[in-house]
Image (spheres, rainbow, N blue to C red):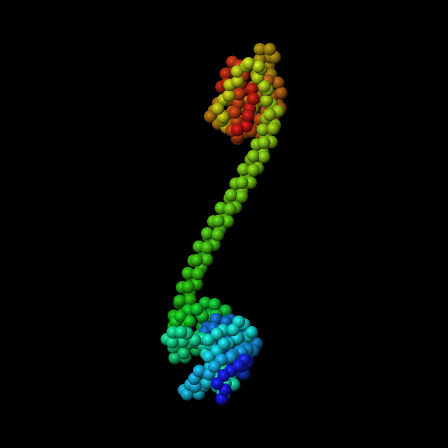
Length: 299
C-alpha cells in the first residue's frame, strides 16, 4: 500500500436515481460535507464532483477499516484547500469522507463530534429551507467553531449572525446614504447659489437700465433694504403734468414708496422681477424717502 497519494483523482457521480435508501446517497453526502466542512459550494446539478488530492498517509482506522491521509485537496478545479484529511477504502482507491484539520484537536471534524450526517438528512428531506450556498456561506464558519452543535442549534446561531450582519449592513447603508445626501445637498446648494448669482446679475443689468443719476450737488437718501412684496401702477396727480401713471412699491414691513416719472409701465415691468427679493431704494433732494423713490437696487 502506498503511504502517499499524488494528484489522486476521485469522482463522485450522482447515484440518486439508482438508490432507494438515502443513507447510500454518496453524491448528496459529499455536496453537504464539502459545503459544511470546507465552505465550498457545488451546484446541485447532478454533474460529477471531482476531487484531486495529494498528501501523506496519517493512520489506519481499524474500526472503519480505512486509510486516512492528510494533504491538499482541490474540488472541481476550485482553489486548493490545505491541511485536509480524507478517509479512503480499498488501498486509497475510493474516498469515504473528508474534513479540515485544526490545531485544536477538540475541534477536529471527527464523526463522533460533528453533526454532518444530520445536516445531510436535513438537506435531503427538505426539513430546513437552505441551499448548498447557504451551508457554505453561513453554516460553514459556525460549524468550524462548534462542530458538535446540532443542526437546530447551528441554525439558531446562523440566524443570529445573519441578523447582526443585516444590522451592520443597514448601519453602513444608512451612513452611506447620509453621506450621499450630504454630498447631493452640497451640490444642489452650490448649483442654486450659482443660479441665483447668475439670475441676480441678469436682474441687476436690467435694473441698471432704470437708474437715473442725481443732479450735481443734490443729496441722495437711501432706505434700509427691505423685501419687495408687490408692484402696482397707479394714477397720480402732479403739479406740472396733471394726472399721470406712476409706480408704487410695497414692502414686507407694510410700508410703500412711489415714483411718478414717465416710463411707469417699463419701470414696473422690470421691477416686477425683484418681487420677493431684498432691495434698496433711494430718493434725491428734499423728497421724503418714506414716500418716494428714484431708483431701485438689488441686494
